[in-house]
Length: 385
Ligand SMILES: *Cc1c(COP(=O)(O)O)cnc(C)c1O
Image 1 (tube, rainbow, N blue to C red):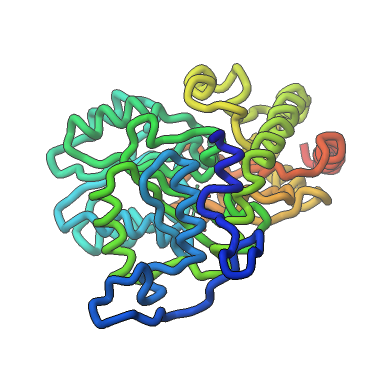
Image 2: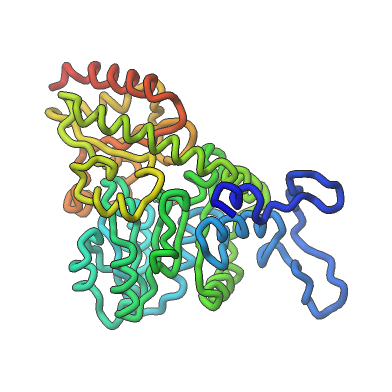
């Protein structure tokens, strides 16, 4: 079956008792056992529950994995992966990564004896050079956030494997629609389901998907031991989101590309970061590694005064001023003080996140309306230049 068909039918069987075409939301915390052996499919909802299992089954299929695990948030999913590590182990990670991941890796994990080396993962030689015998996990994000850097997933998989480390890829921005890291050799793919999988700014969730059943069993053990699972209602919303994720992400990618081209030609814009533009350093790799589009996120810098960026993000009307991304509503924000405010300022500047960088999450509104909104906001900031 094709991706779109699986998104609707795998893991989403109609209810056998009533014939309801949408499976019911199972709210039960415990499941009655036929005898004391506890061998029934479900026993207690932290371990597994039917509505969560439905979402996990669909997502595993879309990512071409064998097992998916759904969590209370994307960070809970990432944290679960880090629980595979022991004191003395080391993570090699990218510099262009989600702010919350940066905080977990740099502020929390060192307290538990885990060290982190951050390198520009779009440079495979830098990844290879950062590997040491203690490196047990390589954590990449492609496209990166907020600079939309592109990392060669297959290249990193080769490096991680040669070094005896696992490769995990945060594919939140790419979604299974545009990139399937497990097919490219990654061991673990992670998604913030809060973003495109849910897709409507109305839930918090995360997921990991693996292609090795034994790794899936280890991660499920950690998930069950620590307990940050996705609840039934969020699982239902994620299952519903997946049914349209292909349509949404393709449409959002097309609008994002059109906006990136329009911004790149705008006299007030100094620089646009979007992997769909031939000027982007990762464009050729993105064209090979992604299919169906380059994603709905882009960022840009203005020519001239830095305060103009603040003026722009505070004056759009359709693009609403908020962190997060991947939903039907378009959002605008300043990463330096908003989504990536959890970076140390020096680290943030060192990796190239300028104070005036503006990030857009392109929703499902029409291109014309979004362009007009940006045009008006860029005009209103003109007086500051
Ligand atoms: C939002 C996000 C996360 C964290 O997910 P939460 O659901 O907010 O915990 C991780 N990575 C990326 C790329 C994100 O955008």
